[in-house]
Length: 632
Image (cartoon, rainbow, N blue to C red; front, side, top):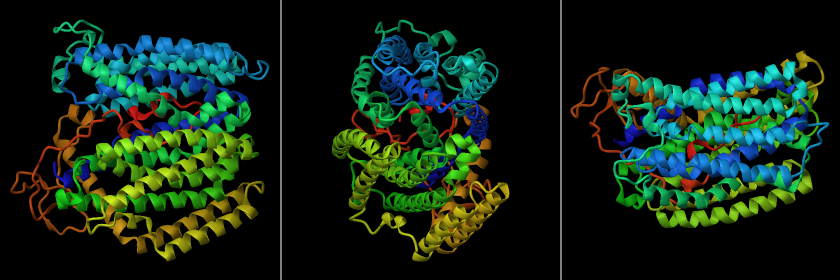
């Protein structure tokens, strides 16, 4: 697959299921905004931090290594041995649940029962719900390996919405149940999630024609259960050793992913009320990062990994691919910088209003607005880091990977220490400042690598981090105007004043967008070309079977490279190489189809290192399956 087709594939992958996810999360957002008005900060803190940490730690330690090992190497394997290995996550989850549950009950501070009731029951049910979710792990891996994209989106979103509805009902009618409400809802969530996968596969495999069309390695639902293989070996020992290699890294990744929650839980730097406010603001602030930046990061990692070769310098690779990677990287950096600056500038002036609308005075008074303002700055760093690391991880050699992992180990230790010190000094804002410091170091590492990588070529993709002075001036002026508007119009002067404050912000945003369109012409051209690629991909996807479209297979297609001359062609016309002309245009020279290099994670690679990005979906307690996305 040529670099042009890979770019179009990445564009489609970035948008696949996005509309569905936005719709589901919008529903959850509204439900949680309603529920928040009936809860205390203390209950939210115990649920969002203490109990969710128990659940996510159990899930992560029990399945993360198995998931990564069993997804490595493609779909050509003895799936019976792989499934047998995956079923070992259940007894392992039981052991971790018992051990961690004992720590949560015996060694950690217990909340005041007069403020937060049924804490012990909550610990037991959250641990049990983790084990229930592990029952669906073989089904999840099978679906993920065969790219059932919409199944994952629908199953997780449906279970989240149903959980939120159950919480809303119980909070209204049985508020005295306390933590018992959230414990039942969590158990209900995991049961629905597992049932979605089981019912889907049962229905799919009951129809021989559908199963054959999907080219699944199993023909009956019972084939997904543990069984003895023909070779006599219960598991694939190569996969088992790979699992152990990943497992040794799991502790580091979990600390990086949940470091601040471990500091809160074990060091008692914040009370439960402050923990609750911090977690809600944390989730609200990272909403954009989850909806926009993460799909871009994950999809274009695949693009860079397929276009570039790890063990070769830029002079030893196809110059067309090197040029394409540089153009895409520069444009993505510019896009991330503009989006991050916009969020930062307007976040400072509209944080209090957003929190007041979302959660009422519980969030808009006190430390909430300050937390969200600093988090908007953190989102800027998240945006830049997501782009730089997705390129860096795709282009690093094995030796560079080893050095990076050593840096990450030191960084994780410094992050925990810095979180503790800054939180003691300036409260919950210290966690965000520690994350900003951490992200700044990681960005610096990635920028050094990118500069060195393109040093011997004429391309300078880091120019994407430079904005025109005029546009920077417009950003600064907009920040000042909206800041003054907040002082005089928000947020205790009535809804008319709030509406006027919003109008001022919309006007400033329009000016920024207009200036960006006039000065950042290269980025606009890239975005238009990407939209053409996406439209071409979606148009051609109609030629594939319904089953292929459902599981997210992306048909090869011709896409327009930025700044490359195009010649018109009829839609549907075939080029000299047999490829269908995409969206009415095709490159003057035909693109040859070559086998794409699919990146495979190996122990010790940065694929095992998360982006230190907190959860972005705004809900009362994020699920671990979204806290650790697909093992990343």
